Image 1: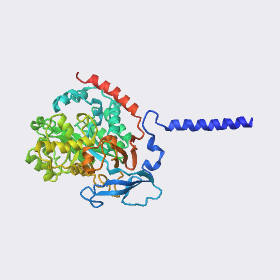
Image 2: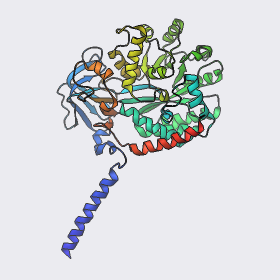
Image 3: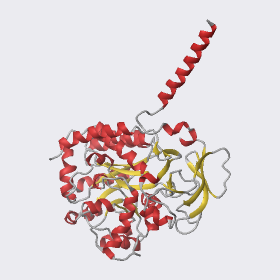
Length: 473
């Protein structure tokens, strides 16, 4: 009997271990939450050891404008960057092998519409107005739901992490308040750093809901910030004025689509912003393509930041932004994906397009931006445009631990010739090995952490099928 009891005890213990492992394993996804290591969840200490190259984006830490260091370490302590340098003593820190890899700050997506992952490929033969009419505007009158926004945002959030993005600005159309709640819930679960641009109107009930969202959802989350979104035009002026007033009341930025297409030239957009007293530092303007010299002078003098979305601009035939002229005026410019008119969440493609558009239209290979310029635009430049450069955008010790690790030994990347150029022209999202936000690993050894990708895709398909029935065929 004693022997049988002993055998049963061993069996019971073994069964408990197996069941416990099953519960901890994300059966449908790619990894378990932070791999079970507290250090990779933003607690304790992590060292990326012997990285072949570290692009700090801080010239005081390394060589050249990108602050480059060779064969260096990066130490994370909790949610912040502790040290960057050679042969650092990290004590008993968890070690990430940096040999053959490149470490740089996480990308900052200055303009996106995450829910639009549900309309990928929609109206690919239309310009802006035609695309909006077929893929977006009808949803303002449709019964889109919390579940729709949640599914689309969940999918897009996983996608942006995979390409090395650590901060995303989600300009939500907020078709209804439940839709906004679904998007915010998915963003909170993603562990991304995010700015949520809530589309404002003159409706007092909606304004009160926005106040509640800031108080109850945004402010308690250290990774979250609020913006107020609006579409400036003389016809929409009451909403523009109300949105600017609400932004000032809440101490947040206004975020607008500005001079994107030729159709915007007759909408009185600049006049609406002037009348609403919205042209001032903190305003984020997306696209800014159809501009005169006087427009650029006025925007630069007001300290307005710009989100450049080259792939979206190309898809919609909107035109080419005047980046060299913005550079001459010392304007703050970052890069954005722009949701469903990009179709892919690949920041490396965005950088390539930002370089290529200027070269193709000027036939000048030395025109701004260079590869080094777009790498800065995608990181510290985006942080400066958001007024967050004291917190993120470079690997300066004391800043938040938002960074990515690139595998430079992959067949599409090797051999080493000029890694700055190769980061822009060669890299694919699959080369992103690690992504940290606030010290937490969201991508680990090439796999998303804590994401059941099969379920995320299945849920997004169901939501996309629902939305397709609501759109004109």
